[in-house]
Each structure stands twice: as structure tokens, then as C-alpha cells.
Length: 77
Image 1 (spheres, rainbow, N blue to C red):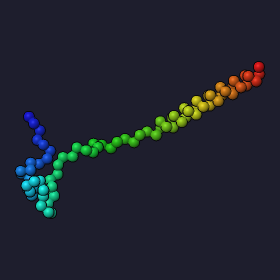
Image 2 (image 1 turned 180 degrees about the vertical axis):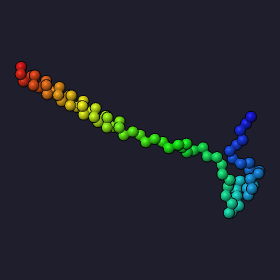
Image 3 (image 1 turned 30 degrees about the horizontal axis):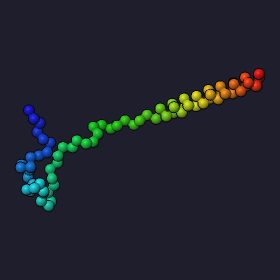
Image 4 (image 1 turned 90 degrees about the horizontal axis):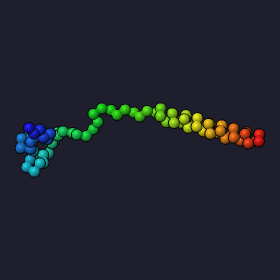
């Protein structure tokens, strides 16, 4: 079983001239549309950039603490 095409049959379409044109004042028939979204797309979360900023800050503080502790340790020797 084959599906019927989404476009109307040109032989049975009113106001359609030979060659596929339409007379002035007429509009061509609608055909099926396959583009577009079926539902709205969700907005991306903004929590991830904030999370990366916090994790980067914690990492920078840990590295700074390690460097500071090594500097204090070397001064005591």
C-alpha cells in the first residue's frame, strides 16, 4: 500500500492552468510542510557556567594555598 502524496493532484486542482501556473487573483493550493519544530526547544541551563566558575575558583585557591605553604616551608629551612 502506498501513501498518497501530500500535494494535490494537478489534474483535479481548480484554477490551475497548463504548465502549473495560476490565473491572476488565484492562489496555489497548500502543500504539506515538513519543516519546523514540533514543540518549543528548552532553554539551556545557566547553572553549568556558574558551577564551572565556582570549581575554577576553588582550584585556584587550592593551588595558591599550596604555593603559599611551600614558600613558608622553605623560609623555615
